[in-house]
Length: 466
Ligand code: 4AD
Image 1 (cartoon, rainbow, N blue to C red):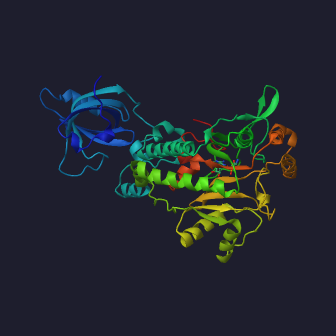
Image 2 (image 1 turned 90 degrees about the horizontal axis):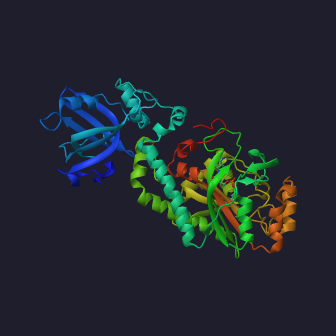
Image 3 (image 1 turned 135 degrees about the horizontal axis):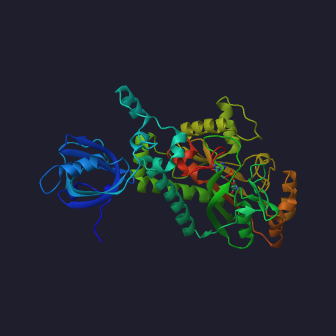
């Protein structure tokens, strides 16, 4: 086969070499009849290709053919790499290709619903362009999502989903190295697993059933099954009614469950090491992707400590109180107070990533273990990035009688979870775990303003296509 070069690898080291690339014609411009420029994009990276009419090399017909191509068509280009005297502004790569051959592999339709260059601009660039009288269409979120296949092509989106892949990868690698076993639990289940009404109900061959709201019950059952430490990466379904910037009806859950020897802090230790490792690795291995996102949606790198800050819920309430925010000490934090506390924590401790633990029992799910010395509170925690929740976790109740009592107290029909409760009758170790929302981690690590930006094909209360 022929030797292909990726656009991202086109650097001045290849000066004067003949290269062969495949990409999309992002922008095509004619200069008279003897010259044309084509910006070719591949996976978010762009290079400027120049056609200059010359005997036995580029014919006037070839220039004409090139300028008649529709944007986003797939082209193969063979040419010589050159390094221009001044910086190139319209492309990511700082070299040009002097075209010798150009083939169209597949044509795009002439009128596209999204112009990728427009979709890739930052707010500042849009303002500048509009002021300069340029014709440009602001691409709104719904248009992006309706034509996601096009929207996905922007450097930002190429970056976002590569970062997402890396988050998942590090989650898996880290846990494997710590002796966790990867598992898969069923997504078709008999009842609700988190309590509450946010479940998709369905008919399972004549029996009422649900799409799993989380792997919660089954991951705990694998601890009863002696797996010791488990993790799962899988879809989670929530029939959310609220149309917000951070709720999806389907998201990817990163779940962990593990035996606890002495204290639920062991679970928080895993969170701590896992995420510090993850952030370090993302900063190190995804710098190109982060730069691409930063160009369109400017943000500051996440501030986090080598050892993750842990505050108790009471300490959090106290900090809010001192800042003039009154909070029910046994209630939950609302979105606004979570944000506020995030700011206060940043000011006081210099971190945008921290754990808040020992939550009031009343606001946690039925399977949560109360504090031994004060049953108004629980051995549970939430984890925040930039003032928004990305994780919730806890120690669980492993005593079947007490679990039944707690489920009843929370209004759950214990018949629907009887096999789960029975699992604890055969000997169950103390255990705990946590659940992470993948899309939220990526959204907040990159300081993006909407979770739909970090889901390839988001499902929300108003969207099930594409
Ligand atoms: O807080 P949640 O509901 O906790 C559980 O599912 C527990 N079973 C976890 C455990 O092991 N104790 O969900 C866990 C995480 C949240 O912190 C959030 O990041 C994400 O899942 N999440 C959502 N992400 C997107 N859209 C939604 N509708 C989400 N609901 C929760």
